Image (cartoon, rainbow, N blue to C red; front, top):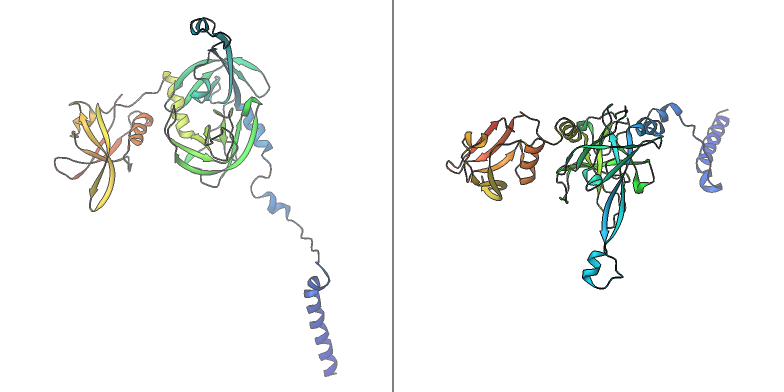
Length: 358
């Protein structure tokens, strides 16, 4: 009886071993695992069709026309050639985002710069004439208006945007009409080298952005606007996975002022000139802005700041020319401005807080 139990135990162990090693001896064993659909659907969206249908009503295509001249090469005499310049139309395209029920549309300034005619096309293909409400070349933003009741996009909170989040770009690339592309947030608060229009901090994304996407929407997976697509990093002009969008908080601030005033109110703290410098303080090399010339008037002067003082931080960020300009340009009217300086006379650190005036 004891031997029988031993044989049975050995048989069971042998069967288990054969079962485990059989895929490697007799070929692969196919195992079908059932997917838990509830778990799958409870994760991130597998389709963004509903988001696109929600948002595309708030994104428009923009077509511009401008007259230009070019020389007729068949006239050899320069004087005659100058009289025979040929007129022609240059047609451009871009995108825009509806930001109010009254027909206000935000886009990039460079989309409409120099245009003589601007045409808006909605998601249904309806076309509208438009008027320019205000422009701000420094931020590369402009507000247009059509005489229609419109559906504004919903804005997202920029402080909730993180690297790795889903990002979707909606626009009019190459003038082919509304297109949705998918990517992620590659970086936030990204400084970009200045171009002919602006220098500021951007959201970086790898969602495909091409010429014609400028002025279009960068949205999160909930369909809320987190940025206005503005530029790409490319030597050829084609998509290379590096696109930049103006953050939505800045868009709100600039659009509000353009709609209300027609321009952006720049804050004034006095008339002075600065130069970038580097100093050694507490055995540490830091950069700053040295005030090399200053008028004896203005909020900054009234707080005791003088020529040769060095600004080392602005609102707790490193002091540089772009930070200074953005602090004055983009701060809400009446908002406190904080400067940390090293006084030339006392050679000591001091902090200046004040409310700038326009």
